[in-house]
Amino acid sequence: MVSLDTNIISDILRGRQNIVTRYVEEAKKGTIFAICDVVYYELVRGLKSIGASSKIKEFMKMYEEMEHLPLDMKAINQAVDIYVNLHKGQQIEDNDIYIAAIAMANDCTLVTANEKHFSRINGLTYENWRL
View 1 (tube, rainbow, N blue to C red):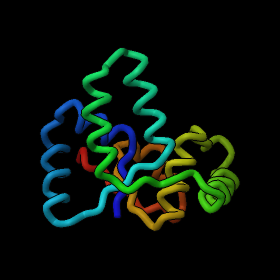
View 2: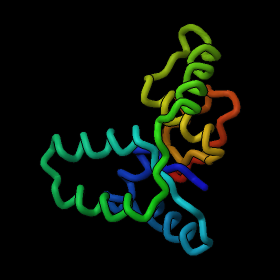
View 3: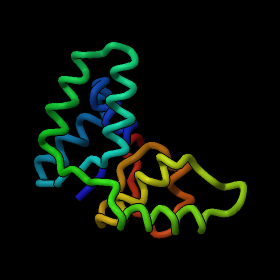
View 4: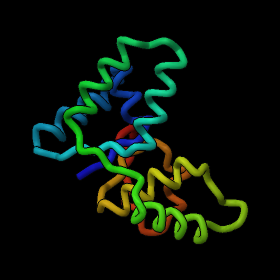
């Protein structure tokens, strides 16, 4: 199962061809897609703030077809460990810590374009589809 980060879903919604192609290829292979609560929050917040109601509808169709991963106690405890293990001066946003923790707690590969942040997290499996 792969958990899609905010930037990857945004790429799909924008029609970024290489990302859409990869998404379709993975779906044909039977890849199970997941989205965590934090990514849902970031996407809907961003789309509502710019009044993109048609994109919200498009996103909701995607969302209905995905597994939903909550920020539960297992993920919160994982997030605490991530925070503690990041070296001083190497901290990242809490939302990115939560996104990584939820992926790790659910044994998912995180698909993201944000290697700068996620590469700092020991034990996180991630892929960058923009490469």
